[in-house]
Image (cartoon, rainbow, N blue to C red; front, side, top):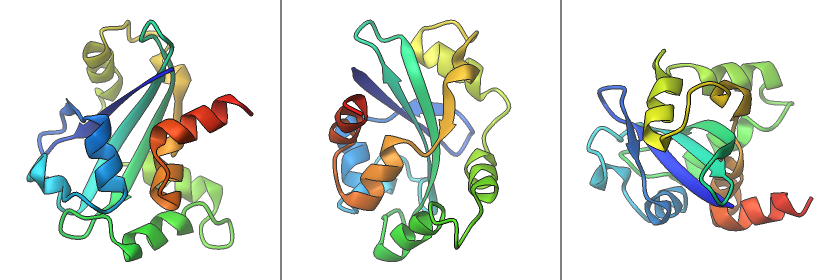
Length: 150
């Protein structure tokens, strides 16, 4: 299993985002603006779980709230609210995390991953291992490995 990350920049273009940088941002140890100055209030993150041949198996969208480029305790509480049905309905959570993406997201992702766009939409979900990592402090890789065993 291989994991690829992309973030949406200020021009609504996907940019490759390194695994270590994603982990550090989600752990609150790295200011996302060090990677892209536009990432002050939100990290629009695409996480793609691929097979060993880098063929996408699952694609997750997540809008991570940031305070001055950093994921704070308050921001984590906002993310946690999106997984609690007593705070936000599942439909509201999905609508929130699917909003604000460019209409050409899938073609951009296909180009970035060097795969056909056909079928990418079928692998699309909200949240995924980046959400679990942000809430628990675990690495995305360990979350994916844990999901692989279930």
